Length: 172
Length: 285
Image (cartoon, rainbow over all chains, first blue to last red; front, side, top):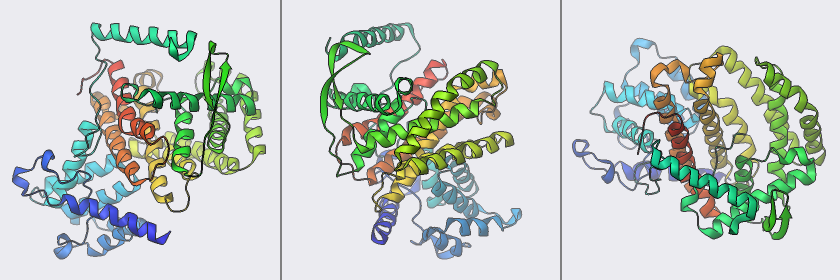
């Protein structure tokens, strides 16, 4: 069980690491976004060297989310810099609070647009918001069913199909 | 629940569609067999997916099939998945959840909803009792559902404008249910998967009900966004489906891999788009 958890963390880490190689931030584009599933828990690899919150980063890495959150909440409003918002976003992300996470990442990015770590986190979520999948994935639905007359016709056909299905089972 | 978890049919192979249908029919039969005719009418896509997902992550599970006739399809014999553990867990979860939903409706504002709840309560409460008698995971599910309803009430009383917070009770509930299928090794992934899936269901329902809730003055986390409510909802839902697809990739799926992937990676976003299109709202591509 321990091994698995460690492996899980490693995969999550690798995912992030693989994606941090997307070239310079100036010519950033989704198409070149590494192998796809970029995430942003890749703490410790260079970025955190001049971090104000290295203790928080460490706690997050160890999955001690509640403690990390407590420390962040203790930081007074006027001391909350871009990194604070980024880490707060990472905690939200881990908890599954994706809406708040994206707001925090956006704030961090706006406060410090040059930071690649914040930019990657923000841009990944912006991509997800638009496409419903992560950058690099090929599985996307084509847009279907538009609210125009021709499609109402299709819908009608689909309904007919369903009714037919109900009456005679799947083969008719 | 509400039927928001469906496969994306155009991308299903015919044999996959047949498999899916067989599990769906199997769940219907299981509901009828264990809980009576009333229970069969509560059949939903969500629990069919749950059953299929449990079979998919359980390498030991070996579903078998039979030909049978069915009242809903009187002229043709159907292929149906025979009784197994995954179906029984999904059926228990369905019965227990419906009981608590109906019980919750008793304190609803609308008279018709209350009336419906009073009429349905005896059926649902006996179904829940039967589920508990069958034992197994029923007790855990029951506790989780009870907690969810209590937490949901608290969030609604608070009128939280945060959709993340509003979705949490449902998300936690599904996180517990889905991790029942874990083998100890994959529990962490399943917990997150369940959490996100619960979140998806709650937020889809909230998106679907925006206009209704505004009219009736009910709580809905998206109405605080004013004009941008629909696009806000779409953004959080799309992030959720994207994360679900990523999480699924970490899981080792056995049988029905394609159908589960189809449902999670394609079906969920397609459903969000369908709801938005139904509203005649913004278009997207």
